[in-house]
Length: 124
Image (tube, rainbow, N blue to C red; front, side, top):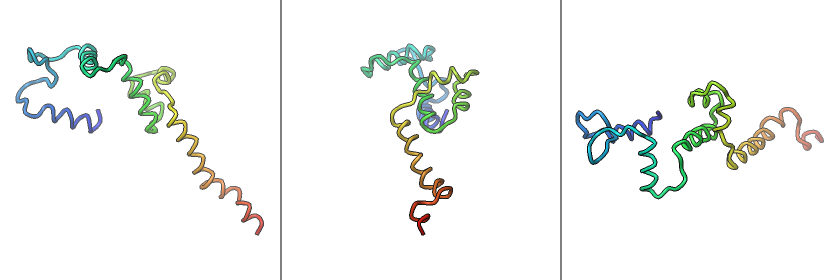
């Protein structure tokens, strides 16, 4: 859990007194036991069509990869023992591909001049 999620959960817990659970059924006050069913109901209320609870794992893996996290750390966080399984979750998106190719600009400007002098410098 990251700091943003933790802060939001703490806000939700404020003022709940001795109640043990944050997420309860409004009608009964009993704890919500099925995350998948509650997720489906939340999507229905928000008029989101076609999003599955399982899709969140793909998003998690993809966002970690986009943020530059290593495939090994992503596998660890997703509790995978096989990197091939993790690769199913990590989707390269256009922005990520573009950023990867753009990193070559920095390589050319910062590394190549040290190895191969520019044409002007060679002519002098």
